[in-house]
Amino acid sequence: MVIKNPEDLFVRLLSEANSAEKQITRALPKLARAADDPKLADAFKTHLEETRGQIDRLEQVADALPDIRIKRLKCYAMESLIEEAQELIEAAEKGPVLDAGLIGAAQKVEHFEIAAYGTLAALAGQLGYEEAKNLLAETLQEEKATDDKLTELAKQNVNQKAG
Ligand SMILES: [Fe+2]
Ligand SMILES: [Fe+2]
Image 1 (cartoon, rainbow, N blue to C red):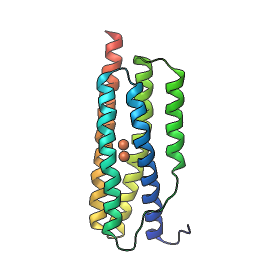
Image 2 (cartoon, rainbow, N blue to C red; image 1 turned 90 degrees about the vertical axis):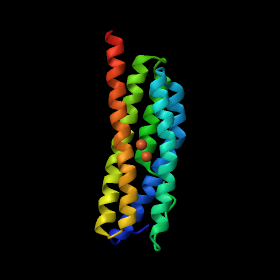
Image 3 (cartoon, rainbow, N blue to C red; image 1 turned 135 degrees about the vertical axis):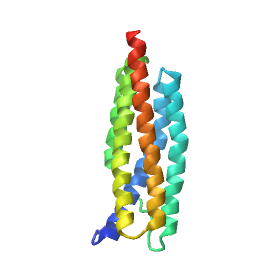
């Protein structure tokens, strides 16, 4: 895929985000099963539902723009982040220590998504894609809220161990 202009770049990044989200929907159930803290498992399940909605939203972005279609490509960065999480699950026993690791792995994913959707929303704004920009900003907010929730769960996890 040749990238010659900002529109091409937008399609490229949108397609990468689509691949990343699809990989995340396959990874989140594994994270939920590996979590010891039921609140953490619930957070992963809730974000799975949100992530499905985010994939639909990416379709809505493409549908709102007549010349844009999501391409099939692989987001290698997400593949690696998920592989690392998988290795963590295999290397540690279920419990608060693995939970801390799972939270860290999930926050790496969220930070990646925050960067990706931040760029996409800004690019959509520059290109005058108003509806697309609003949809992408909505997902960006969900990723930020998830990151905050994980920070909160990490604090509770540490406090439990201390107490
Ligand atoms: Fe997402
Ligand atoms: Fe996310």
